[in-house]
Amino acid sequence: MDKKILFINQEISPYVPDTELSIMGKDLPSKIQENGSEIRTFMPKWGNINERRGQLHEVIRLSGINLIINDTDHPLIIKVATIQQARLQVYFIDNEDYFQKRRMAEDESGTEYADNGERAIFFARGVLETVKKLRWSPDIIHCQGWMSAVVPLYIKTAYREEPCFANSKVVTSIFTDELKNTFSSNFKQCVAYREATEELLKPYKKTFNYLELSKLAIDYSDGVIEAGKEVNKTLIKHAEKKQVPLLRYPGEGYVKAYTEFYESLF
Image (cartoon, one colour):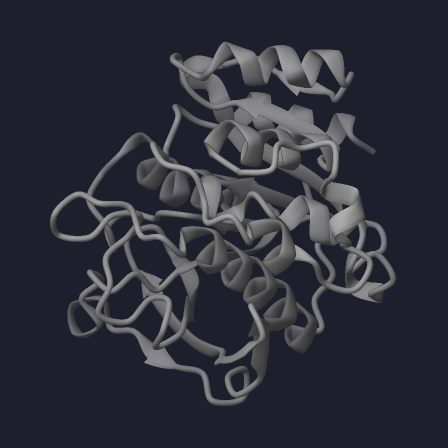
C-alpha cells in the first residue's frame, strides 16, 4: 500500500507508559510505514514526557502561530523526536497552558482536568494547522484516542476547503472508555470554528462526555475501527445505525486488516 497516512494519536509508547492505546500508537504507524506507506505521526506533548530522555526539540519553522480557543490566544509549539527502534518520527503538539507542567487526562490526585475539552480542541487544530504548514496531503487520517475525536468534525467542515485535506478519508479507532467525567458546559461554544458551527452540534447532548464525544467522531468519519475487546457496545451500535463502514476487532492480525480497511474506503 502506497497511501499517505496521518496518524493522530493520543498516546505513543515509550513517551508515556504502556497501555493498549500507547502501544498501538507506536506499532501501527511503524508497521504501516514498513509496508510502504508514507506517514506522519502526531501526539500531545504531555507534561509528564521527559523531553531530555526522549530527545525532543522544537521545530521553529512550524511553531509560532496562535489558536484562539474560548476567546483566548494560545501559542502553538511544535516539537519532534524519533523512536529509533521503530524508525518512527513523532511530532508533538505543545502549549504552556494546556500541556506543560500538566499530566495527561488526570492530575496527580486522579482528578480529570476541567478543560480537557479545550485541550482536545487545541490538539486537533494544532495538528491540522501543522500538516498545512508541512504542505503534505494525507490520503487517510487515522484518529486514535479521545484527544483526536474533534478532528473528523473539523476535516469535514472547517477544513474541507483546504487543498491538503480535500480528498482525505477519516478513520476513527474506538478504544475502551477513556474518560469518566463530562467536559465543561461551554465545550460546544469552544469547538465552533469556521464551518464547524454550534448549529451542527445541536443533535448532541448539552454536556459532552466520552460517549457523546465518540459519537461525534463516528458521525464525521469515513470508517470506524473497533480497536479492542472491551469497546463500548453502544458506540459500535451507533456506527452500525449510521451505516459508517466498520471494522470489527481484528485481533493479532490487525495490520493486514487495517490496510485492507483503508483500501476499501477508496
